[in-house]
Length: 139
Image (cartoon, rainbow, N blue to C red; front, side, top):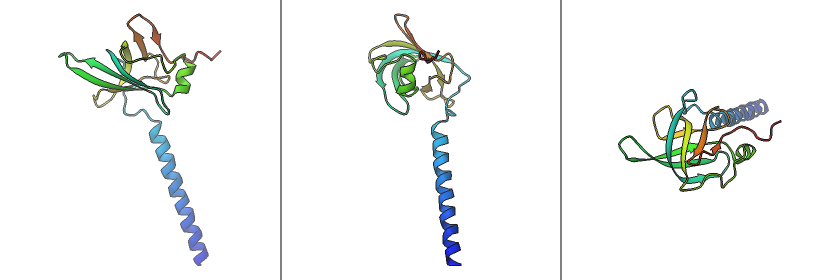
């Protein structure tokens, strides 16, 4: 009887671990914090571009309607996806003046998402160059 009890405990433990891991993976890949139906345009100065997995980040200083500087954090795709779209780690540099069309946070915080899953999101430079998320390697 003790052997069956141990098997049951091990099985239950395994199921709980798998549920925990699946929930963590699912939570990581969701964009539920962002309004993916909305598109908002912000214009500002890049302060940092972080080229890292799992998601690269663009940080901007944006003047609000009262002239106050608001620090924005914009999450985007992984370097692999960005590379296929023609980006490099030097595509966006501190000091660049950019306009970003983005999916804003649902809670109104100055955070957003831009990326391959959200058509129309992109970075537009002062000279008119654009970075989008279309896969340039696809035929």
